[in-house]
Length: 548
Picture 1 (cartoon, rainbow, N blue to C red):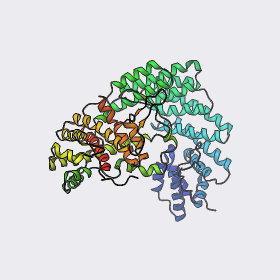
Picture 2 (cartoon, rainbow, N blue to C red):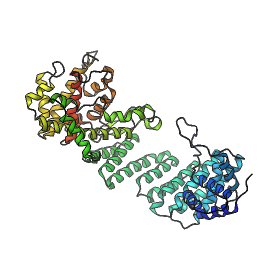
Picture 3 (cartoon, one colour):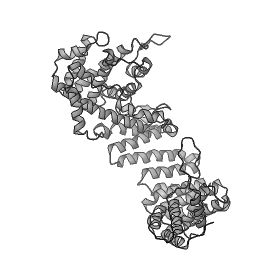
Picture 4 (cartoon, rainbow, N blue to C red):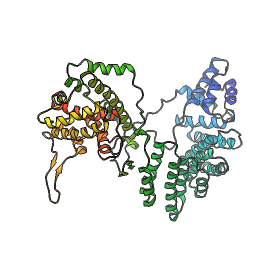
């Protein structure tokens, strides 16, 4: 078996002084010349250990779908075990024992106690240090030691962790606002240890008010240990914290975020007066995404390519059809991650929202799409709208179509007879005159009518009277959801739903425009509405011959 290399141990001790973070220690150690080839091999194995993170103690490491790091080489583990008990730095000693515990190397009890004791010794070292960044490290070391002592039933280490947590909490309570987040970790650790942290959490919630997220964490800790008679007061403080954060938010979308949280929490906690306050404030808040163009700059070459497509078409109708792809790009980009199950687990938990336009309280279904994925889809829609606008503008410049020419291009005997084609043609002409309000208001009812006529032979769209129900005709939302049943691509059904009727996902153009909940829509939004009509008409005219 190999022996410790004195030059390596000396270099490791020097690099790890003052509980330096492991990456910093690794960089210093890597740059140190330790002499022989054997010493260099030891040094490199220890550098690898410093860059490796121990697995979380309280997490199921065999959870389905989780990507685990590759196991270390046996030779590396042997070198770690040589130095684990000989390095003076407690932070590094705890880290090495934790890695050896992960690798199931040697005597398990020795590594459990070596890791937990190393972390607790680090807490004491940091309490006496002058490093400004010491508190987050101290809190994390305390948390790791606590988790190890509880999981492996180390009673003496658990008692020591509780004592150190109280000492650390007292020091942090006497500190500055910047120390609120590590204090929250310490108080949560105290609760994990079974200690009553209510008094400390109450002090912290009143002292550390700059960061709303941290203050909410303190209130959560307080509520867990407070008697039920105080829960209503704490619940009100939670909502008030969110309202205060909204009042001081430096951007419209951050204010909207806090107000939405406030209204949701007030609803969950049975506080109707505070919910009403939040909803009233929501109604007076304009989200920044109604005016910010976050899609980025379209390269000139892309603009020219889309214009060239229009220039290459032989006639007006063909030019209109080329604005519509077979698969909607914004939805197609998300197909693979969804198929791979990337949206499982916590991404599919039920969520409660406040619709800023109403506000109408909505609760998406448990299988609703992940917020981030939908945000990317909406951004894709907006970008695609700008590309569509480029092509529609080029069509207007090249063909300068009059009303009669547009009617001839759009008319379909069944789906869009001539009187309705005349109406839709006017919507296009309003668009080219930059009368975007008029274009949108004229086109949207025609989109719904075209869709209804297109689906009529495929799926039921009329419900008959039954009992006290008078029956009726399906409206836009139900029609869009029926498209896949009728054999039309789900990519387009989803895109049109997000574009026109989804009240929880930003665009919702049909409802916002026709109900007067928004100002003049931008050019690229109107271009998307017109494109929706063209997409549906393309099926009627046989330009989309495959109904899947």
